[in-house]
Image 1 (cartoon, rainbow, N blue to C red):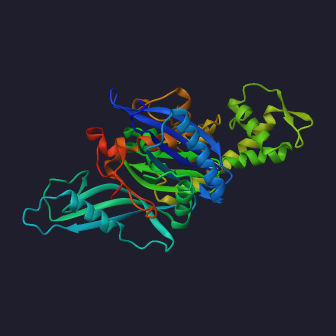
Image 2 (image 1 turned 60 degrees about the horizontal axis):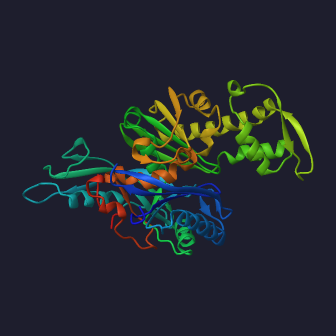
Image 3 (image 1 turned 120 degrees about the vertical axis):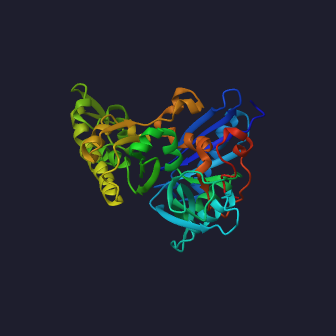
Length: 416
């Protein structure tokens, strides 16, 4: 195992950094998790760098501890980003094939995608990811892979994610300062959706909701294609703030109360009773009823899910999602899925975890808080239509995944 490449997925989350490190298991053709860890980071707010020195120190501590545990250096590092600076939208590209043989090549497909990318974006923004949604040949739609087919007009629909160059570059600098090299930067929601949603859910119409501390990421899949994605700039840390303020205790104590006793729906309140709450100075405690914690949490959760509903209503696809999948640390709150059913009008909502047939891991790393980091190590399993562009300030090179041959469904996934 020591000679295999160590692949790391780094999720730049809400006030914390989460990393999963894995190696390819040739016998089972899966990734085997070697280590994983999540650490708080005061230099990250809402997925964006607010203090580069604090962030670099957290990266050094997190990745260094994983390397020591594995007794091996990280060979490939993939970074997942989020935050309000990200914008996603769909666009259309065309390419006329003038050759006599009319046979479509990979180069023709790339040129059509390049044409789809040629659109105005904000001055400080750059393209992070381009996700191919589907092709058309001579107006015939529904073609997933036109290579080798004949036609005169090749068209493509893509889903583009852009982000602030300033924020992306600051994050890259923070990671590079301790000496780490970035192999790819991704909008974390897309590889996450590929590992927690089934193909059937994507086909019938699914909403994925990644509940973080300071952000909530929303994606809508219809007919197997990502049609809409957006980050909402607040999340479950508001629950912690409410508990801290109303219970007159520290944020750390409030967080522990939320995680140990918190429920967001009355049916999950198992029994009435009292719980101790430390005072702000930690010198005394007072008791409160469990139902009072519910009374604090429930209105805030309803407000958060209502904001998701507003986002979905504004997407233009509000009538299409049938099922929902909730993931991220906030999905662990009992009752969250019930609120999603009631407020979002979905037929069924479940908690999402990484599909276990893709990876070998201890159970602790299937916790939803690790889902995005896990997905970043797995995205190449379905990487044929997921290309990475942008992040031009750091070196790109052939990835470990490019050496796995038929294990991958695509090649040169980093676009260069």
